[in-house]
Image (cartoon, rainbow, N blue to C red; front, top):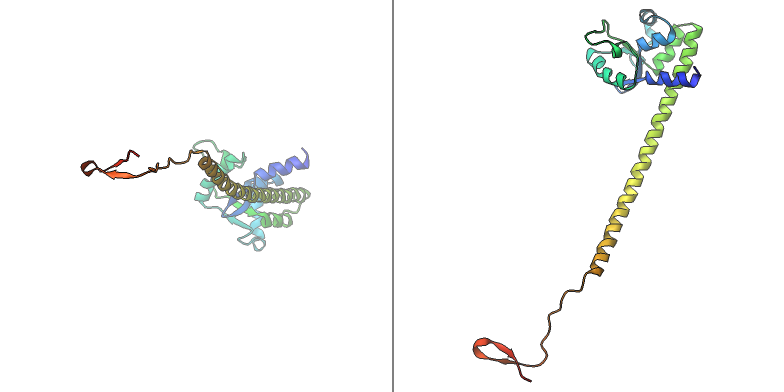
Length: 192
């Protein structure tokens, strides 16, 4: 599989929780070719390298909230694809981009180094995609504002055209000549 395809697969494993882009310990362990237990042991032996903004443990509620997100992303994480009725035994740890970079110093193998390079590329690609979406959203908003102004101008033009197409209001005919007062019946037109 080409590196680009691998980076795309890794990008599908990047999820969002607590406003941060993260990867699950299970997905990382699979990529590194180690057991989850071994990955977490190495992290705990070097816990000073993993502050809360590098790594944290999910709550049960967060695990539940990630199920639909992971399924939508077609993720193959362990808890996202459990059969109905099965449950995870331990709350997973998640790693931010900085935490994953730190993993390369803890898991000191050639594969860990190569995988970390690919993961960093996946995070960069994801940032580029998000930036492109933000730029696109700004452009669409500008177009909407522009056309909203045009819509108002076009409405005004159509109103003016409608007024021009309407026949002029009927003028009250003014009686030319004199009027004679006829007592009970009021005024009547004179004979002339």
